[in-house]
Image (cartoon, rainbow, N blue to C red; front, side, top):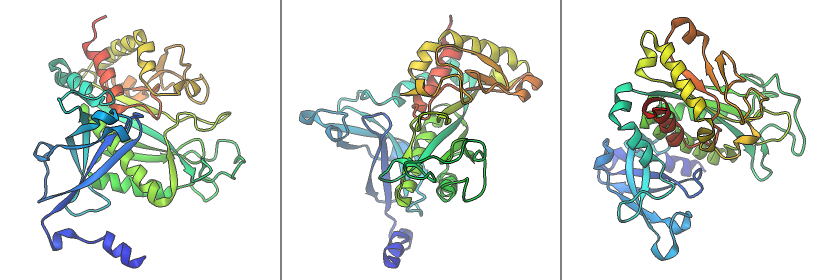
Length: 356
């Protein structure tokens, strides 16, 4: 095993200018992440300088077997924390050979919204709080829980320390550092209310890059859990009953909201979100109705509400924002399995472009 580790840690730059680029894309379920590697003649920092590639879409439920070629378009480059050196991770979106985005390519429409002059002028920022659950392999039961049984009630686990309360910290800290190494703007981590559940935050990040960074952070996390022999779940309600679900609270601001008097812009934006509540809920993740019950720090999925410092509301405005009269707000509705391209662009479209 020591020889294998030595080989895994080989520094390619000592013997060659060639690098390895891991091309990453979203599979047919909309949540599964796929990747494959290729050798390039030298370091690359601009995604437009990377070659397009292709894959067998019939094996990812993204194309029929008789016309299975799907084209990968490189969109964002990150440093590779696994191979290190000059090696890179490449976030891609997917197209047909004729150049049309395939149905699971949600980045394409998001990019159109974020490139709209009115949206560009408002410089939308996002901070996404990605919750997730670590599961024991083979039994699909939360890490640290007795198999087939339950731990003590919620209360001691949130932001906890101790072997009987915090399960999987080595994975969480490894992910934290790997994301920072990769160039992802991870702003923090914490243990969540349900034992075996954790959260990382990405942001503030502007526009389409928010989606790129959240997806890449998810990929890195799944690679780390693969190494650790633990299963990663983004299920918004992994355990039925009196246990917290998993969300992806999305913090949002525009230039107008961050400027003096921005609280009035925030209130108008929240009013618009309320008018389009059903449309947003339909795009905020699968199985979200099991999480948004009005209990466990959530609002009911059937009604829209907002409040200052209210974690039982659909949208929360922070005390500091209220005090300063400017800042940001938090959309608490998105589920942990939401597509960040969809959620971020939808919020921008509703609050900036939509004229009721």
